[in-house]
Image (cartoon, rainbow, N blue to C red):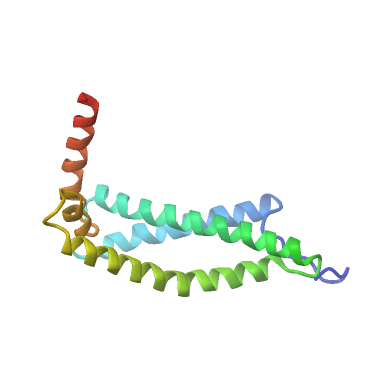
Length: 149
């Protein structure tokens, strides 16, 4: 892609690229807001916000790493390498293999938590994936106990 007649694709580089990224992030969060209105049973806004917060943090982390790795690979391979092609490749791997790995690791964690619930309270909390109602009072009590000590 280093020839004069073909435009080179760069992941970061100017106002337009940043605007596209911001619009895509806004569209993703807006889609989650719209989806919330159609879910049944509908979660409280606070619980929904915690779930969306986890999704946004994970997506931002993966996106940032994919950007950095894509640019590093492209720089290492030289001027004929395309950052956008590497990003697409890494994104595809992330959403296929990465999602499968996340599901497997979550299944293992939940299985371990359910087997060890009788040993420690933390395993009981971890065994209830997505249930913030029981975890929040326990976390608040633990924080209050830490402040008193």
